[in-house]
Image 1 (cartoon, helix red, strand yellow):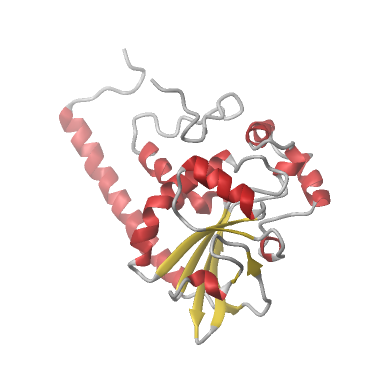
Image 2: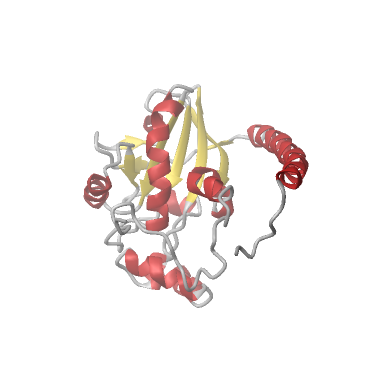
Length: 244
């Protein structure tokens, strides 16, 4: 017998109708927040950044690939990593099929990491992804935008993170401090009259829109089922889950 409350169809429908009103309120609130994001001031990027790409060195403006909007996912894959972060890899799985649709709306979406380009290329081939992925290995880009940290900073972070973080660190082939030299994030840029502007940035739970599986899990009977993440770090790369 389920431990969950059991009810009649009529009870379910009444509760569902009440919940629907709350969901509509949230939808309207999300629309308001989206408008506020678009109204943030644009900050011109005055520093020159260079990236290594499959098509050769590129500037930040060239990463737009002829479009006026650019979304960059800061993928945790540092020079000391042997493989990309497993959580970022799950996010990349959801980004990859969206790229073509974003292009149709004048948006280029790519990933950027500090790992050398050859490491990125090998990992991308393993994962079977088609999106563009640039290396900022010889650039201050990740540091300037608060997504990479010095060894000293990472060592201080390592003293305060929960034990669960050791698992993805090991899965990336590095120690805890090495893993914490990188952080995830999403940055938005606009290109207008030859000038690149930063328009938005987010990290942590602000990244949930690009973690499509969480939206689906939130609608499954048991939700995310992450009550004890220390005991159950469930993320795997898509080629590492056991076949049922």
